Length: 260
Ligand SMILES: Nc1ncnc2c1ncn2[C@@H]1O[C@H](COP(=O)(O)OP(=O)(O)O)[C@@H](O)[C@H]1O
Ligand SMILES: [Mg+2]
Image (cartoon, rainbow, N blue to C red; front, side):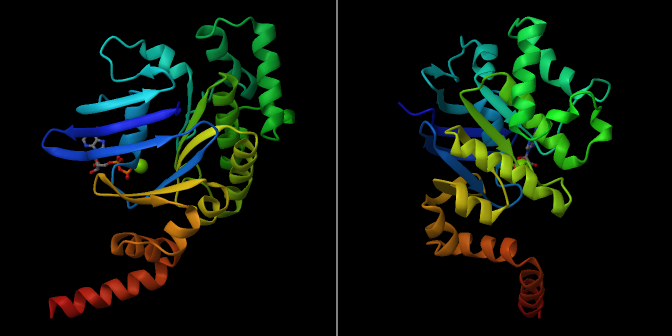
């Protein structure tokens, strides 16, 4: 049974249909990277999976739970899903350790002793064991994002959703976060990752999904989708991402010619 199964998912905000019939699945231990232009609906898809957004129609199953069932226990679903956003969303007034224990104690009702132990294990996992008494502002962006990953892991999720986890980071800090994600993937964590890091997607993903304008345009083996895409829309997007400078110039030139 797959970990995530999305069938004919539609989502509208008022008159704007952002997801226009999405079908896809993620199998246990699979790493799926979602790529696509800004505004194509990637974040909305992730947010529908843990019900931060209410789908307009269609069904979503996570494990054996139908998320889109009106009677679903939303909190129970969310406890199984770790979510890491572009913005780290740590509590600035709490130490790193406390950031990792607060939800364990309040939501999972773990004792302080158990929560501390789980938090320390996960800080070690992301290479930040020595930072437990620091406050978020004392850490680099890359370290803060690794704390956010350790916080999500401390809840013992069945799967992890990442929404552009390295997009807010200075380039030299991206590698440490990707290394943590690569390690998690190697440990068999099921992961759905929205990212613009094509070399990560190529190396780590089992499958790459290209979304544009609310639909999945193509999906498949990373080397095929990224290296030899079937669709022109995918090729255009990859040119822009892989070589932004040249893409911008040729586009400007094309527009000028078209406008002339
Ligand atoms: N809460 C919202 N209300 C209205 N429009 C939204 C909302 N969230 C997203 N959108 C719109 O939905 C479209 C897709 O957004 P998003 O899922 O964030 O795309 P992506 O993550 O691929 O950049 C965009 O046009 C965005 O402006
Ligand atoms: Mg987004």
